[in-house]
Length: 378
Ligand SMILES: Cc1ncc(COP(=O)(O)O)c(C=O)c1O
Image (cartoon, rainbow, N blue to C red; front, side):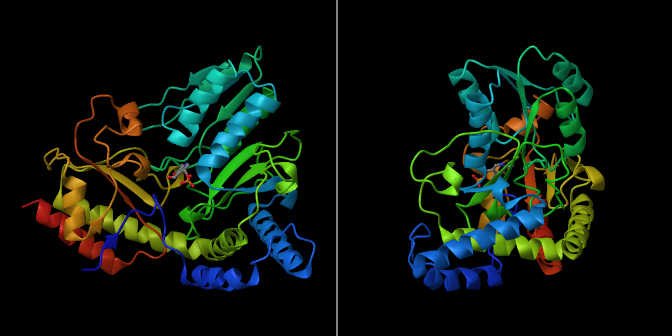
């Protein structure tokens, strides 16, 4: 039985070309990139070419890209550095951020005795820009705003330009978790008023365990992992050229194919929603998943009142060959309501499924997924 995989917001499979390049790099980059001999210099050249390629696709300077282990590390680091090195005494974020931001903000604010403010969100998961502006007008405490670009559970998109301008005009720093949008949306970090941005390769058909943190060149920050002088002294530790090279390749491919792939995925998502609604007329979308300009085209989060609330739902779907998520992958396996869904509606009790698609998803898979779901409706 072939599994129909509709959980791409949790992780995406490697593109075959990325996998082939990783195999090539395993032989080509065995040496330590800090070594001065020719084998080391070869590894270093691949490292720096990867950084340049990523910077080109993100429209920023290569020196603004620091490699790290992924979204969680990038988010933690941005928040930590703002509190430790930039004198931030207040962090403003939202209750529907990924736990990599929420838990990091809770922990680091406590450690640095800073205030933590959570913005309100409405029943559709929209943040309140006016509330943010009002809070920012109080400049008595140096502030970091950490708001994600695309929400991994419900798909809502925040307006980074608007948030960034609000931050700049009120002397606040701005971090965005762009894990769900890098490789899927054109991002111009050179033009956006932004200080930190986080990315993770496994969300755009690259390998797991590697990502990057954009740190705006105007910021003066110190090492976030003490050790050797790798990553211009910011993050000690021998770089994994295989993973970093593969991430650069995955981002190059995602950037080159973005427009065509977006259309393909959007079509699949729309067909899927039509089919789902025909099967379950009471189905409704959580968040802004049906508003094209305000949501990730890769994510559709639905509640299905026709189904009994059943802790075995995802397990049963998996047995039938359909892999999906109930909330964020990081919290699946636990029966707790997703913190995102309960922020939209604390009394939400209908079963929730997050379907998420990628360029590798096919029309045949969508059809089969609907057949599997139809078996639940009888
Ligand atoms: C929005 C968002 N932020 C952060 C992360 C964490 O990324 P990583 O798995 O690379 O640590 C994820 C992954 O699920 C995510 O979706």
